[in-house]
Amino acid sequence: MRDVQREARHRPLCYADFLEIEMAENMSLADQAVNALAMVRAMDEGLDMEQPERHAIRNLKHIAEYALTDAFRLAQDLSFQAQDLRKLAREIESADKPHNV
Image (tube, rainbow, N blue to C red; front, side, top):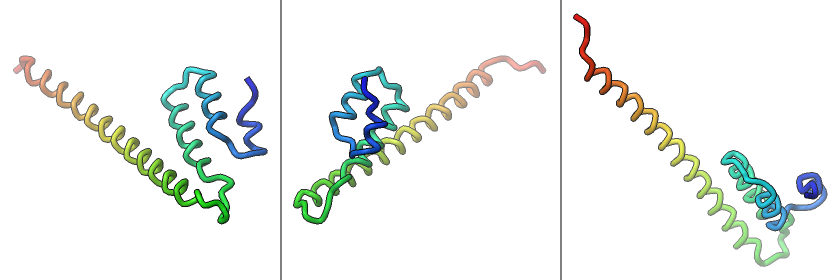
């Protein structure tokens, strides 16, 4: 596989580059997050004031940023709920056991 990241220093990344990275390896959740963040960052690279699609692309980028923000917030909330559930389960287990008096 060619070194996509090294080549990217010399030109903006395109969707095919990200697809190649994703298909080349079974990506972990962290790698998927980094890949998604890089893709969103690259969405408006190279756009100038003369390109009529710039507004639509920037709007898509904002929507993608909001979607990522919401997804990260939801994942954190679910993680906190899981922690609280574990704590509650331990408290219930502790309450069910007879205490030495």
